[in-house]
Amino acid sequence: MVQFSALLRAIYAIFLLTSDIRVQGAVNQNEMKEPTITVVLLARNKEHTLPHFLTLFERLEYPKKRMALYIRSDHNIDKTIAILEDWLKYNKHRYNLCDIKLDKLTQHYPGDSKGTEWSDDRFNNIIQMKEEAMSLARHIWSDYIWFLDMDVFLTKSNILQLLISEHKAIVGPMLNSLATYSNYWGGMTADYWYTRSEDYIPILERKQKGCFAVPMVHSCVLVDLSRVVSDKLTFTSKNVSDYNGPNDDIITLAISAKKAEVDMYVCNTEIYGFIPPPLDDDQHLEVDYKQLLSIKLEVLVQHEPLPVSTQLAKYVPPLPKKDKAGFDQIYLISLVRRPERRERMKHCFDELGLDVKTFDAVDGKKLNDSYLRQLGVKQMTTYKDPWSKRDMTFGEIGCFLSHYFIWEDIVRNGYEKVLLFEDDIRFEPYFREKVKHMIYHANRLVDWDLIYLGRKKMKNSDEPWTDWMEKFPVRNLNAYSVAPLYVFPTHYTGEEGYISDTEESSIIQDVESAPPTMDSNLEGKGLELEVEFNGLAKDEL
Image 1 (tube, rainbow, N blue to C red):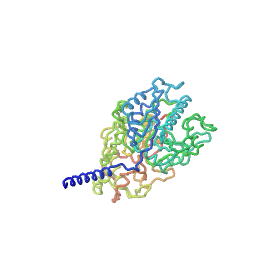
Image 2: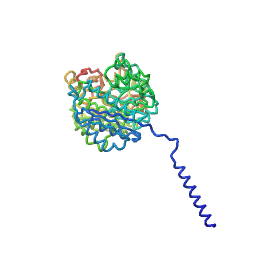
Image 3: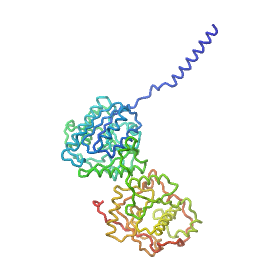
Image 4: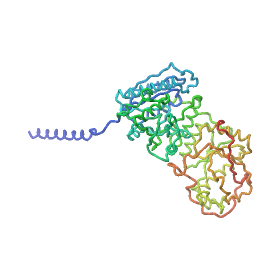
């Protein structure tokens, strides 16, 4: 009997222990599932963007079993459908529902030989598909519907969680692009077309951060279908009372939202992703390919290169063969202790097809007065920074020496024409084409020694010559600057991520006046005389 009681006590103890384990491992009864989302994906002639888009899309952190996909593609003249079929074969099963129609028979809309024109037939087709997607989402009780263009590159993998957390009826992320284009309108005219507003640029440049009510957001738009008022949203003009706008899907949605007193919001708190500008009706698809290159370069300013999955890599064309773009040598000045900058510039040159020699910059952090005295380099007593009026820093001395040593290398090798980059720049669209045309016109129009492709403007028209220029009586270097510039800093002073290896180095203390003693075959060239170069018309670029 005693043995039996001991056995019962042992069994009871095990029961309590396992019960406690089950309680501790139980799911929190207050934990909620993520909202369900119908994602609308429409693609036409997007062979060049799809490998990157789909790779980023499948990397979204949102649970795929809470997503339904509505995918349509038609009127293609490229491999769009082949890519979609390939991707769906490996990914379709991951999503809760997939409604897919891929039309392999249609190629051109009537009268559209380029595959880019926006005819009424194309608008009507898109309007019909988006309205059908909205009906599907409502029918399957989706909490949200997400309209996402398949040339949007989402670099923020938790973007859906971020947008949902804003608790807006209609919301989209501000997407980075080229020039001043983005996926929202700051203003809308009385006849429902785009107009620039005063707050457009401050929002675009993120000088104002947050979520802003705007008359239009497109290309990446999340709509909350759990709101009663969402039933009034439509892409079909006949469903909007007294509609007098154009036959346009995004404008119709914006007008229906306005009539329902639903605000559209664009959020710029984060860098969510990138989008190329749309093509004009008279532009061929080749322009879109070049804009993709420019977007890839913009992505590199803040992120790793646009990824592509192993499955889709076969659809990405090889990088261009590298050359020197008509120059004898191309240099990159880069500090050894900034490997991330070197790596970014390497990716840029890979995309641009430029064969570049990396030159180790002189590091201002390793300079001191005694070393500079050995070189015979001393600061002029009259020199002050034009803006801060401070003395020169060791970082600026290092920058000077880096350029000086490259000039020596140029002379030593007998180069006649070279291109020189620093490692903190971003490239304007069509960079190679612009440089080629600029050199052609410069050779015809001016006698030039040096042309700035990017620079900090040193003097305004009313700024007098600074005193230290008297140290350079021989001023026969013909220096020009392109206008507008072809390269810009990746970051400006005060921006997030801004780092200066010249301005932030310690200030040189030895200000004794003495000329440099380094040998130079460039003696007599003097300081550059800056002259604006306006030899290129916009249409020639």
